[in-house]
Image 1 (spheres, rainbow, N blue to C red):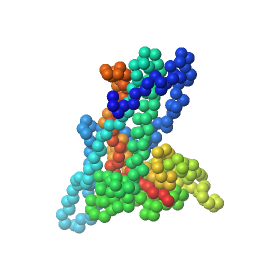
Image 2 (cartoon, helix red, strand yellow):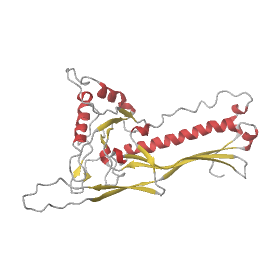
Image 3 (cartoon, rainbow, N blue to C red):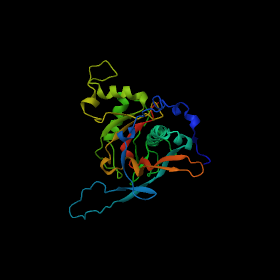
Image 4 (cartoon, helix red, strand yellow):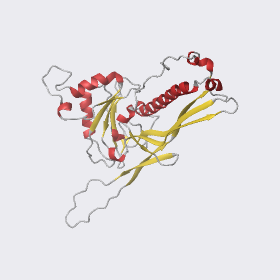
Length: 311
């Protein structure tokens, strides 16, 4: 079993004793399913990848002078976003001595908890990295640019932006500005569309500031007796989504309802859910246990998220 780490009885000296203390203080309860606050999760098709095609429709109907023919227009495919499915997994092995001493059940139970939490941590990291790389031009989407950009292309030419023109830290002013941008969103033919901000997405460092900005009745950053418009207008009704694994302490985002019903926004596509298996090794008589799952995380329509790189 070259390359594998096999746990031996000497690794669990205190556990082999007849009287055992509480198991593995090293097993921590991780924050589960943070990604579900902002990602749509659904089952993938039975292929090595899944492709979502973004199309375009007609532009606004023009005035037709009396006697003139009605002009024709068409739609079609704009770009395709491909999600490649990857396998994530981990395993551990227990020696025959542990089995003979009757400690394999206790040790295996605890190590399987460690294994499950490792898979949870991986999924949280993979999904958070979609946002961590959102302004990195090395990670582009189907439209050829990064997720948060001032230059998303339109089919008729020109671009639209889902990023503050000048990066700004989270404040009442910058949040109001990004919500204005959300309300001015356009489709791929540059027609205005109805899009709402539903949730403020922040790293742990901004969670308290985000809560104050959304919940204060009056403006939180000055002494004027002025209403907090975000609160009074019922904007960002989904509240605050704190994503622990965001690496920037100043970047922040607004998740929108664009294409929410079509699952064309931030997506976690499960090709295969967790599969667990156990087998014995003929050469060493050790017991081996593994768990794997297969999925892809990414985005299709950049209108699903607006944001700022912060400071």
